[in-house]
Image 1 (cartoon, helix red, strand yellow):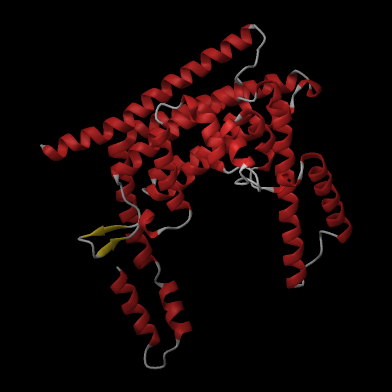
Image 2 (tube, rainbow, N blue to C red):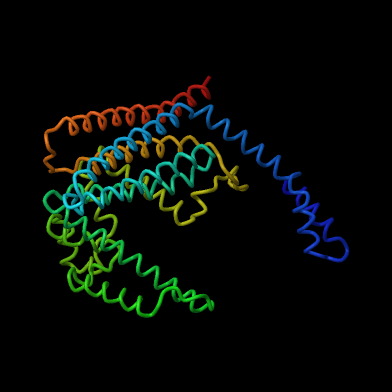
Length: 354
């Protein structure tokens, strides 16, 4: 395929070396190359469905189940009256929907054969879920940490708007963001810093106070001047993962996902005989299986954390009982999906041995 493309470009260049003519010749005959390439990718997608269909379907069902649960929970929350909705619940609601969309992206990339991309988006899901777990586990401080999180998101949003204004100004674009508006941004930011301290500006500055008062390890690191810019993601993760089955496993998967997010070649290429890199999507089972299972697990953790915060005392109503039953049904789907991802690899190993 690559040779045919280059041959056509060389033909277009001809003796004159007209690159514009060469490019347009390729555009005019694009179907000669795009249709076979898409057909090849379609074949790979069909292979993905053959091998992983049950696991993908179960993850999809889990997504639908938890979406329905959160939609009903959200409706109940809104109908209770805006004054009764705490900042913690609002923060968790936003985090759930961000995680739901991200989990859908993981599944879509898997179905297309882009396992490294799915791993990268899994990292986003893991980070979203970890934030939600930290807020959900805050008990009586949940509204305070929820408010800090939302205020921090607003602070970051204002920083992006200032960047937009600078870009528009540099490019001579229309100044839709006025100087007075940016001054009001600065005033709002300064008020937050006055309230929470300069450390609030850090990446996870919103979590500093909670960790300082509830994590002996973080307090020690801060006292040793190792956290003067506030918590890291690892600090959040250590605080919430005490009940994980195997915290080391999550550390390993997160490290591998970080390589995909930051564009490390080892995350997107494999090598045949150590020489020729494998390009494009693939169906590497050892990537799809653990990440698929981990996606199912993190989605379940996100749904539980965002609807039933730890330490909360939900009203003993029929709706509460029904919500718990639906969450438990979603957890069953999670367990079956995890098993399906694992068994797909085991079945493949048996086939190879046969």
